[in-house]
Length: 380
Image (tube, rainbow, N blue to C red; front, side, top):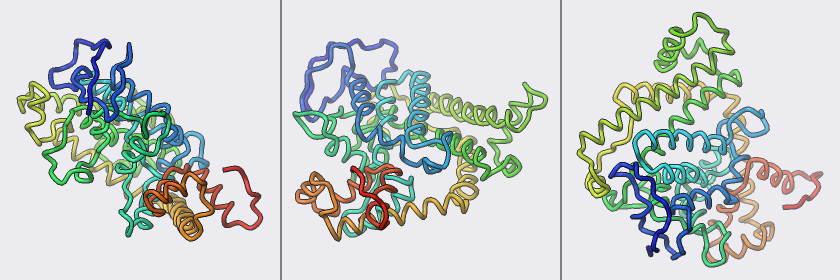
């Protein structure tokens, strides 16, 4: 990738092993540097103003958008992941701008109806190269977004693109070839902290799980002990938000403390040192890792597999499979630009891109337009 002379301000407090904007490996298509923004700040802004980012506000996290105004969407999950990432990056003296850019972009590739939608698309694409939301994220930022006249995609920096490759085995046969940054590693963990804490909050708010069930979860008990030291008695309505914040704080503080220890013990003094080790350096302590896994198992059993959640996600899968099949059987149902892309890359991939880019709301509307006889044709 080509590099341009940098003229932006670099904060002096970064650790020597943090990703440096001055040392960025550049972009696929050379561009003049901005007068005040670093490359990573520009990446952040390009992601923030992208069409794919705006669509996240109507994409499912756990609860479909119309089920309630206060449940998280894929957008609010992304914002919470971003905030945790910035907090941890600052505490570890890592590059906050790069962490923010990766966090804002990490879920762009998700289709409608959460992970259930991904499973549906993976099934429909089984004979056509499959579907995986992290791979789709790269397709979006490198090919599908069309906001600039000189190139397709967003032309993000090398470091941000590497950070968006959350699962290296999807992109590299040899993991040692991956360019590592601690900023990308911390976003990966921040993502898990965010969804575990807010999915627990949403599950309690929806009444799908209750505090009695949570007595078996170590992190919930730890949060309760911390709250009891400050408050003698609280109603359930006031206890729950305090408990969620306490769990979030416990995980974040453990992540910061243990990661500092791991970096020191590994003798990491530069980015070059980081590339020489394959050991993960940003993560939880052994105790917190067990407690975090305990919480994830609880959520899987009691929330994600709750019959009310399964009913909605199963319906979403049926919608997407029906739409995919209809478009494949009759491509004239598709917008002209999707048909043109199908002629370039094959119709299955073009249809997959189109369906994956839908919001929950648009997918439902499109399903009605195609399959309900009394639905009035609307604008696309």
